Length: 93
Length: 499
Image 1 (cartoon, chains in turn orange, red):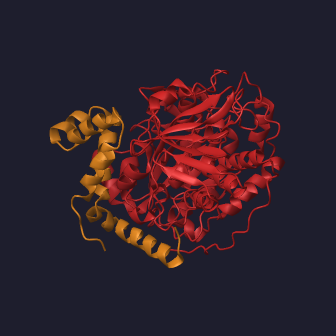
Image 2 (tube, chains in turn green, blue):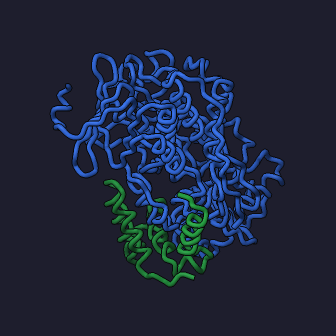
Image 3 (cartoon, helix red, strand yellow):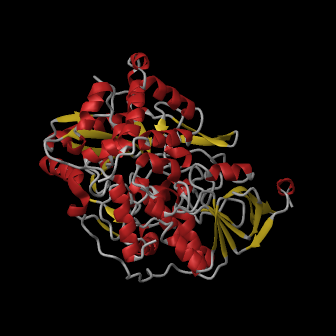
């Protein structure tokens, strides 16, 4: 079982957003900022498709965090560790 | 020497028989076959060499590392379509689902009829496919490895009597890690970065990662080499009488255009087909645990003749969180039931065509979905709901705005992604209609060839990696002046495992 790393999701989301080209990068930063504030969420609720995108973006970060993913049956660290062990054992690249 | 060469300044110079640009599905295959055939080969890859030890099985983390622009390349048009592209040794084969189909015979017949590609018959390509299939250890996914997500789709298809089956993939020793698209942590997926690239290197090819090719050099109608900028800021010139351009469907036309090549027909950068796709979810009574197993392991081809193909798709919670077509509390409630969610994909063999051109050095991709393709999505989404209901779904979440039924969906209502860009330097035997000829050589230029998805002149209706690899194999042996031999025996394969 992975130990919870509270910043993994947020850091992952930041890296993901940083890797996007403009203008998506600025657009996503704005959506995330709105989604994280009650008043921002009320603004987003007026535009369904954009609201869905904002929900998805923030949730993507939330569920990247082992504290939220492991209870749903997904332990990324264990999957990666099993992969490394198998590659070593069988001499894979 | 060209003016561009002088501006670039003098840097390192390498001489070779062949310079291959790009180490993805086309470039890596061509490079390995050429090098093993005795040619001196230099491969220039813009992206990095990835280390599987750093594959974290975390989608967000891996999107930023393995994909061009973090996987957020997007088309302009209605609707905008996300077009994720892999970056690095292996290209998009590093991050695709591994599904392998030969080019459908009907498609090859269309190529003969419409594009004059007479030599590209099923019989002529058979040895090329056989060679690639052996090299990549292609085999059908077992039901055990396919997992619970495929079992849901299978149950629905069987109840409805729809044609279906398990997919063939390039994997060996797979344990169903569930993250093919985010870097296979076991290296079971036989992407070209761990198959053909090492073969090329073992045969003496120089593979240089972090090399951004700026121009293909041509003198008096014949290839002379390429010039590239290196990751460390240096310049490199490869002098070679044969250049194989395999920078991918989006970037190959940009490279050719800035080199002043391939524009005579007016087709360069046009005819972009994408296979637009979308995914739907179902809430089941049973535990599905969609990420335990091969994400793309099962297909339903009942409507393939109408250009509609269903293929499996699945992922860890963070991937599903982004893809779920819900918001607010409904999103939270569905995510709380992640373990009971099933997901399946719908791909359309598109009649729509887009284009790519450069703006300030970056690709601008335009693509408008035509009404016929919107109609395919309407029908496909309705059938997808039927499939899930027949499998016993409690709820179905279609990728449409709340309250919009599939039959009333408009282009702007669709939430699409695409994974198979094709056609922007299309092959056509006639110089006035295509960028390359039936031997994948640029019309009117000796020694410059193209070996990636850009030469594929029409949508295939199936995943294209095998088609691209087979065409690259044919090109390599054509350049060597040899008949394509039977597959090399690579009998060191590991057995399939069940997680």
